[in-house]
Image (cartoon, rainbow, N blue to C red):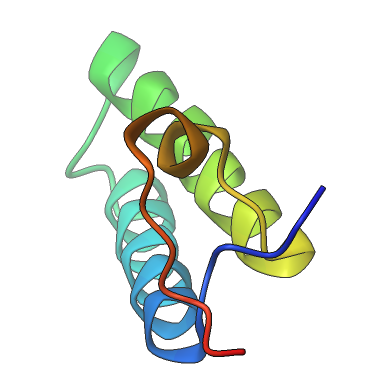
Length: 66
């Protein structure tokens, strides 16, 4: 796995994940949308930590500076 998630992209992903988690725990997102939001937040955190996004590979996107 080659890194394809850059620093700015990583920050955006972590921020969005944080917002989704806060929305869930403040009961703004509940039920199925809340669970979907938590799953998306988990994926965003995971892809930012490993610096690899499979969707970026499919579309040929690379935000990581070399």
